[in-house]
Image (cartoon, rainbow, N blue to C red; front, side):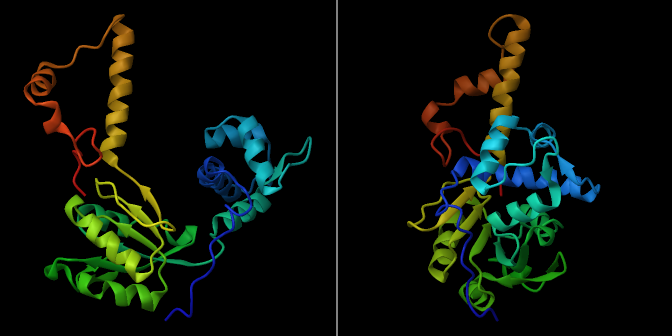
Length: 258
């Protein structure tokens, strides 16, 4: 049983912008790959290219951490791995619970990268009684009725929601009431949470729709004008009233179930 919660990393109190915080995992991934190849130092240009940002932005981001590198040498890879890991709170163990062990939830549970990045899956939870006790990723699925007890016993502050959209808000409310203060939401809906609770949303359908927009624009540029939609897509769009096509976010329907 956990003896208490660990304080969050003090990124906000240190004045690190949210945009910089969002890029730190990109730097850490690139640095970890360099570390695994036993590369001792890296220039800002090389690291920026590996992380997919420009070098000026990288140097600015690192200045918030107090890291400026050495002229002619670059950045010490191992030290930056430690520094960014510490800033992100990854030098400690973060127990997480995952709610909704359908196809997506099971795939997430089987992801092997959690432990190496500072996260420990403490429990897998589902509302389907037929799932209870079934092993997924080497862990037995537990029943949703025990959610509050599981959160308390494991000192969980991070929850992952991979339920269908209709169940996500209720699960979110229960997680928050149980003491969870950070939620990663894979359900295709927007969650309402009180102040002090952080939510990160991962919506695969939205990401695909953004890619479709860019593909359509590229097609239009290639033909020298507006891209022409395939007949089946054009006809379906014309036959469906705009108000009938709104999804949980008020824009487009979510096309990929949780």
